[in-house]
View 1 (cartoon, rainbow, N blue to C red):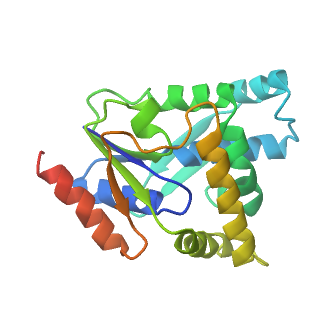
View 2 (view 1 turned 120 degrees about the vertical axis):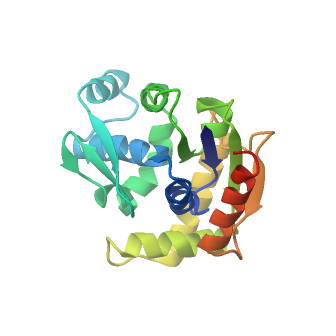
View 3 (view 1 turned 45 degrees about the vertical axis):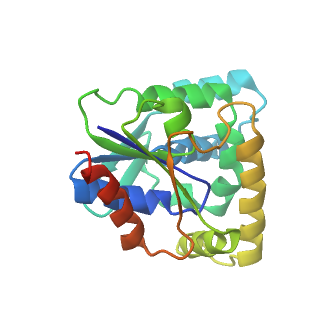
Length: 219
């Protein structure tokens, strides 16, 4: 069973997907964390994203691993825990550009498709239901107002950084929305057969409950 949860930045998909997977007793994968880990690696190595050979070299030398616990996911970059680092403002500002690079998308999708066919799993991202797993058993598309999404991302960023600014984060989300929706490769969009849910005025338990209710009607 594959459950795909897509949506823009700050829509709540990561937290929702993690808790839904826990309640359903299945595995969870945050595809966005993989993109962020690659982004961090590019930043750490001062890579010019327009230099295809340099990008390719970094991808070939980078090992990314995800480990799930009951309460969180831990991501390792070449054996080092970078769970907090990948949520930095610098990574957030660049990750959309990184996700446009065909080589990176291929690397991430290849990793996601390594998941055994008989594994029940919840995956979240921006193109899980449209590109990575178009035949997913369940597809959900989460969204929220730009104001609410900015507030959520602000709370997330301020845990790891100082001098964060809500308006700056809002502007960054708006830019990222435009970039994600207008990119030529796998643009952000709702799959035709996905169930859409506006999470602006819903709490975590309500959103997770909605997903579980839809899944358990069938499974």
